[in-house]
Amino acid sequence: GYMALNIGANDVANNVGPAVGSKALTLTGALIIAAIFEAAGAILAGGDVVSTISKGIIDPMAMPSTEHFIRGMISALLAAGIWLHMATYIGAPVSTTHSIVGGVLGAGIASVDVNVVNWMTMGKIAASWVISPVLGGLIAALFLAFIKSRIIYQEDKIAAAKKWVPVLVAIMVTAFTVYMMVKGLKRLWEPEAELIVICALVAFAVSYFILRPVIARAAFGLENRRASVAELFTYPLIFAACLLSFAHGANDVANAVGPLAAIVTAVTTGGIAAKAEVPFWVMGVGAIGISLGLALFGPKLIRTVGAEITKLDRARAFCVALSAAITVIAASALGLPVSSTHIAVGAIFGVGFLREFRSNRTNNNLQSNDSLEPLSKKKQRKAKKRKLVRRQHLITIVSAWLITVPAAAALAMAFCLGLDYFMQHSG
Image (cartoon, rainbow, N blue to C red; front, side, top):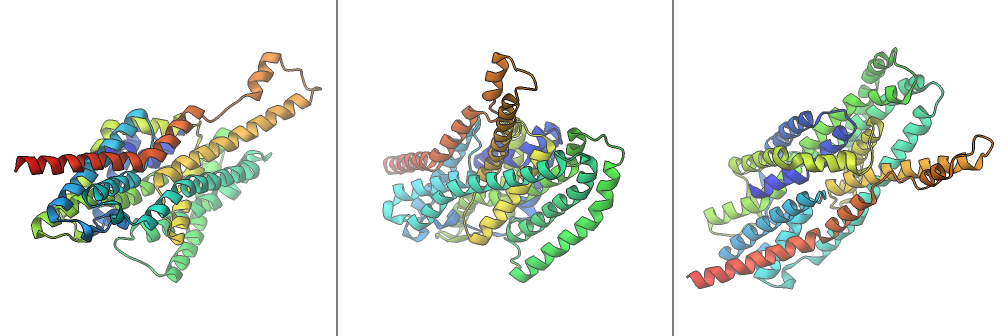
């Protein structure tokens, strides 16, 4: 429960943060949506069987005894929960999956030794730290560059929006259709590749033809300015927040309850299993914990993700959400373990750096055209140094990411050894 509470506090910010930051949703609205869809995702699509040792990091059969195994899992949960709690406290969105990976890793090493760890898997997970944010950032920046050049910088913005917004939203619907098929519902159903492609094409065509008249109507009578264009992205953003939360609930709740399910199985059967049946109440604990954590501690990180890293308007936030879905699909297709946290935060940085690059380029052009008007010295300095991404957040977040696995592992080792010592001396 404590672990789920912290997932709610820390992880959910990525799904609704951009929608809140761009004012498409109020904070309360976002919390309600996230709580409902996270819980629904966990209970409906969370699946009955979770692999107890998430991602096969250690070999459960190598554990000396069931008691050791249970102690190890308890330590892993505690360590991951405490680490997430600390990260939320300093305002760094870190990956829950990686916290639990670190916890299990530490517990494994403390119970057996270093050989129990599957280092190949660990290597893959480490690679994802670089891949997720970079991919997320690149894709988001590309979409934003496209929106700027095709819509925002056009003479007639509204006509351009009527033409391109349906295409962009249709791409998003398609991406989410594939996302749900590949990742959101993967615990219930594994479709063939051909079926996924057909569904994607159908989703694109249908959504495009439905959206075209809808967006044309919405755009009717809007003023020809940037803010009006951004308004057209409001509903797609809310839709994205719902779906991201649903898929997150389906996948990440399992991370929280995997070790718990393992403990329940070990206690009831007296053996160690690689897969564990998840009783409904265990999923319930996960879902309630996530919603509670969200309500209690979520707002802090939602603010960090949505507003403090860089300023998001609705078009930018839309790029972030779209990029999150596409990156996860690409990663699933390549079989890379990525973290939704890293992708979403990477996407926000990508959008921010693109803005910064563009704004600085524009300022330099202004200064080279002296014929316009000589800017005052102070203004020139200010214009030159305009930073639209807060460096301090970048540093906090990246360093928190780097130490997530070692920190959770160290905590789990400490708990595990402490429990062992306690057990030996109390008996």
